[in-house]
Length: 292
Image (tube, rainbow, N blue to C red):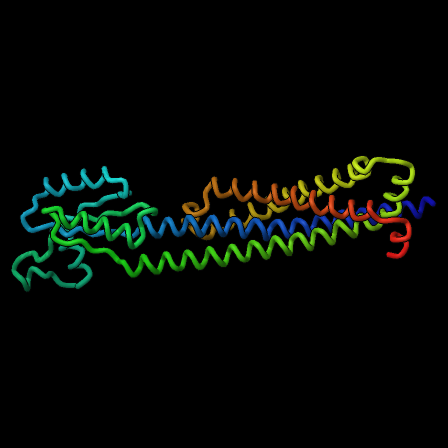
């Protein structure tokens, strides 16, 4: 009898370890998807906010007038950052790019002063930039307005495609996660189906029968969540170490949201799967238990 109990306890222990490992793997994948969604959002914002509107100032516009225009632009809700590029700076940049000084051929500096305006991500779309451009063109100090409309459209289209792919992947992952965890939980409860039936026969309430199973599942969910967060933390650390600049895309907020998502998913998935599996065996008759 002692040997039998020992074997049964070892068997149940292996089931717990297997369930914990499978849940951890599922939560790691889920955490990676959440982290990818947040990173894609930050990457989209970063790319959009680094797209600039270039204002070409007129030949007669002085530096003081240019600075006054910058002050006006900085007060606008769409402006994230402005930069004044003088005629001399524009000449230096083009000389470096062309490998020759244009003044030697033209006799004068052919470049005008410019103001580079980086817009906020919410305004980095074709309609908003078109309205901003029309407004700026009416300013007498501005000779021309240029921005990369095609590039902005490409970024917005790519962001939409990536968002749809990640959404579909997240839905599929949730379905697969539920199936895997549900099967593992059901196998663990199946071995104790006769214990459940015996407790029913002696008059135990269903809530009392469910309690130990739910408690164990919640503890397994917490342990699996901690392990999944630890693995994700190591992956992010390696990313920080070997990919400089990734801190701007994956910050503390994104890490906290990912960790919270992993814990919530681990708790809810284990709770729902256990509750449904226990209820299934509680509703079975003695004949149905023996026929399975």
